[in-house]
Length: 185
Ligand code: HEM
Image (cartoon, rainbow, N blue to C red; front, side, top):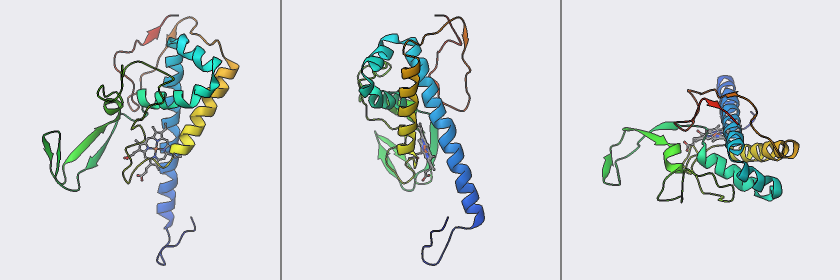
């Protein structure tokens, strides 16, 4: 708001759009990761029990939720120069899709990549991979998710699915394919 670099300050519209970006980027992202993580724990009570018995694992579980259910399916970027990658040529100005679910479940990197393992504490690219657009909100997102998971498990250590549950599929946020739309306990 108040920064001044080389005599220049942000204009009002830049501050307004920046604020909108923070609201949008910081809202659906953590919400989607939290709900996917909770849903995974409901389906895998053994993993839930490990967290209830050892809350010290929750930070690792948050990284595993981010790996398995990255909030964004993909972003598109434009190559700034020619690059050779795994035998393919990407030309300057080509549009490139970065698939976060794909790299986060790369079997060359993660053993049993489709299995939730709250002890795994994985490296992942849910926040990007360190380039200039790397997520600004990583620390806040990790803190929010850790606190939400801690509080949920403290209040509902034996949480389970009861009756029929409708699962809302989202077009915007990443969800793995093949999930049932209706669950029975
Ligand atoms: C689970 C939570 C979140 C995930 C998975 C996530 C993911 C991402 C990804 C993949 C990018 C693009 C990275 C790249 O292109 O290298 C990004 C950018 C960004 N994120 Fe997040 N994000 C999360 C939470 C947040 C929060 C809480 C905030 C702020 C309150 C935030 C603010 C931003 C902003 C401002 C950018 C754009 C940065 C830039 O272009 O320089 N994000 N995020």
